[in-house]
Length: 375
Image 1 (spheres, rainbow, N blue to C red):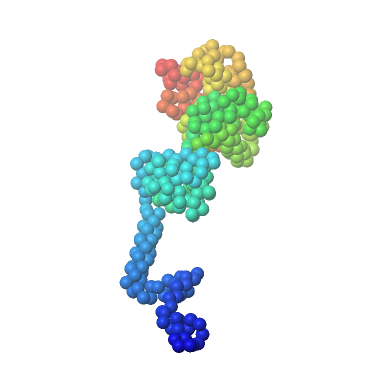
Image 2 (image 1 turned 180 degrees about the horizontal axis):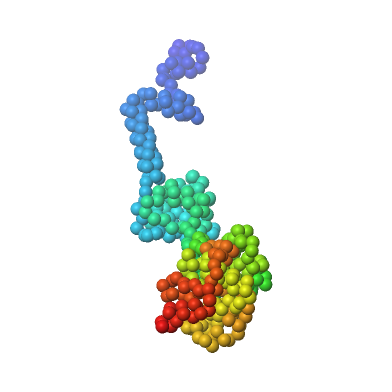
């Protein structure tokens, strides 16, 4: 037929039309060739992208370098000292906030929190009381918190104090007061020394403790220190002493401690008491009488006090008193077990811290008239 198109149907149509194939976006981007193929035809975009990446790397490097530098730099802390009291169970965010609020680490708490979380050090922080002063580095701050190196407070037990004075000191300290409602006997029972008198059983020294520590723990530390000191002194004793036990040495040492604060006189004073014990003489030492008076002593020892009998009155009772009268230091402990060899049986205070020693009562009375009565 005229005008009929031969061949497959639509063949001419396909030859006369330009076909459009839609781009296929696969998992790798355009035509399956990814971003690389797209950028390959855009050098300006590639250059901008490289500049941006380089800038980010430069910024990250600068930040890391500053962090490393800051980590080791001494801090300037306004408070002297800055206090950080971390309670048990405080979350990492709370620790970061406390370090910021106290002025120790003056960086955004959110940044500090992120660092503590990422480094893993936040969960290692130990609860406790910490003090920081200018000069400490951020590295050292975190190190102390992780290791639990709390700031310690000092407590000094003075040589010659009695147990009543020690308890009064403990009551003033920022510690946990487990003994506040206990009497002396109950305290000793809690320390494992039931039936033992507390006097003289605690070594006078300076002890360091963390805020919130137990008063019982501090007492135990001082008691164990006295145990060690007494044991060491007793092992070095003069074997000819008329003292039968370490307890008797402790009692004598407490008397020596109260009789003089002069180191050079301790050995001779101990020698006087040893001489009197050997001869069966009364010790006649005022500090034992004063101790027996307790809180009734008003600072002035009178004749009636010397004549009033009590377990600690060495004017009316022979031998050593039943307990120590104070907490002796190391020098007095050694003086009691290694007394100076002397013929003196008496001594009297000169008023300048030293003592006048006498062999006879007549000499002693003259010394008393000279130094006490002023005749």
